[in-house]
Length: 268
Image (cartoon, rainbow, N blue to C red; front, side, top):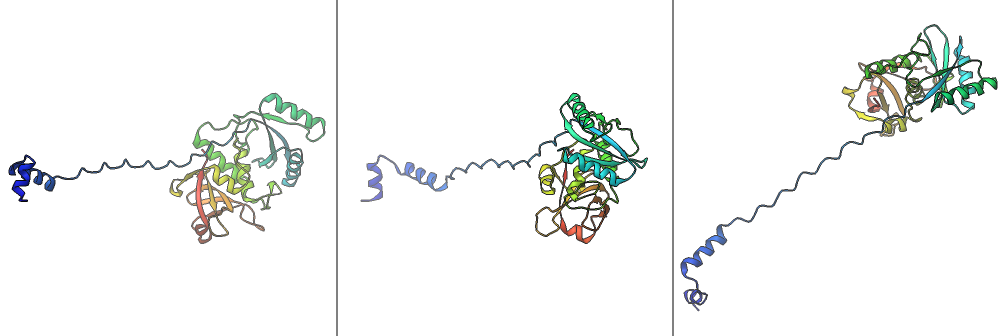
């Protein structure tokens, strides 16, 4: 059958058929609707560090060894304790975490009656880290800059204290014991281990890290966190380095620390 006869049977003239052919030949397929770009997952926001409630302060020791023994005695009572060095050359200890002033005072009186302590102060949550030479009731800085300065000042008060694995008293500090004590004296509770401290913080680029942030290292290679120090700014940090060495300042541009560095975390 000829094409003209076939078209007549369909009721189409040549012009209509040509139009259909042109439409099919030149028509563009509909463009696919582009998928909306997927939102990048936001970085995990670490929960704010728990803040300490009321604490107790006691002791005024001329020798750091006596402050160490006192802190150990308090820890045996189930109380977290941290000592600090004053500019007047004395060592004092803060300990406990109580929900109210009445609870703190009651525990202090009980410890006094048991002969564990002779005298104590109740320190309110808004009281600051006892800066070297400051009175026990010194007010905590309310601004972030002041808190960072207080963290650095507190850390520098430990320079020269010997390293002791697992130590959290004046007998010595391991790396995370040091950072935990510094933050505790500033009213913030860090987890105990360096790995947990790493997870608790908010990631920050090294060039944006500020004094008081923490720096983490994988000293055994890989990415497993094994060490932590407190950043001072300008590429320096304070840490408890290893057995046989005292708490000291070091620089990040040293090859060992540059290679082991994993990341910085902020908590403020």
